[in-house]
Length: 473
Picture 1: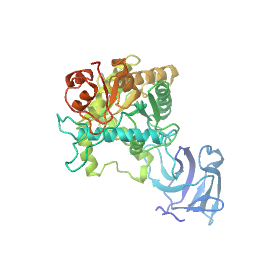
Picture 2 (picture 1 turned 90 degrees about the vertical axis):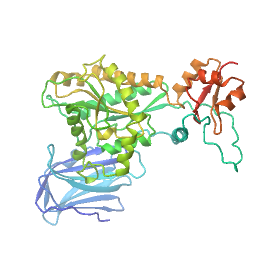
Picture 3 (picture 1 turned 180 degrees about the vertical axis):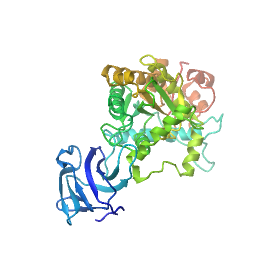
Picture 4 (picture 1 turned 120 degrees about the vertical axis):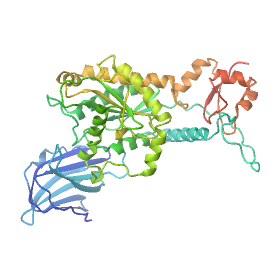
């Protein structure tokens, strides 16, 4: 199969080849001295991927490539047509190849990028079980049904049409007691090192260590489960990171970064949520632009434009940033910031807001946390310290845990625990389709007002799947 070629007629040297293995793909990058023509095609029996570079020669040792964990079993090279270069990748699994070129930027020169994508594989190491996903989908449908009701409606779902038989009320099902899913995104990765400190510390390495520690804290706590968006040194596009969080039914998305500035003086941690009208300060705007440019470095889809041209999506985002998603982000951000202030100096004493691409998930509350300034020599040393890394991860999770203990999702274990703490007898009822507060009160022999008081209900709106505590009559 012959794939599309790329333009460029100058002679080029391949000064280095870099390989990163991810769970769902491998990325091979050729660092070139000039743009060149490239043909990429597959061969079978045995399975191989051939990369031909016109008028090029190899100035690096391919035997040093870290093949472990990738689809590449071996790499062979040779001269083609007298002045061309042929690179043959011997494969150990099925792949779908794609390739593109990138022009020089502030970190690299000309590059040919070859991605080997694995059909059917997830970019997340331990994807959510399908049964868990089904529970989450059912809960989301129930919440949408509740939101569709008019204020003051006294029914869990709209009433049936007159010509339809009444909905049969089923006995309450056991509480799902599901885990709260925290998606943890270590910024940058692979060919994108992020900011680099005075002593050479790379942001991508520091934030991955903190993300792994945070995931351990989350997974050690009953009722919570962590999903690491990146669990290795490889690159993921900004849109792909939020897409993965959504696929994993995350309740919350947190992206970990390390700040940098042109001066070595700034220091301290910062917490950012998505801004409705843009950045709330000049520093936040500069930082947002800086982080969003990582898509240019990674070359996602070979596109150099980060502008979202989807008018419908822009409208949805504009609407949702005015509702609970942004409010939850700000609320959680305040609690995380308070905890971070106990272990590190704060660069800003309040949650900042900026237009980070990685935060633009319309249905998942999200934060971007700059754990410190890697450009500050003292803070760079602390960011390398495992004890300080653990202190930062503990502080972040403390803020998240405090929020969800106060505001647990309805089907979560924390919600079940809260309900039983308030109702020691364990008398509870899970709302079914067709239920109303009055019918539930009659069925259990309690006044409606007493039922509302026991469940902190200010109005008559109830949700399918919601658990009500039944007070003693």
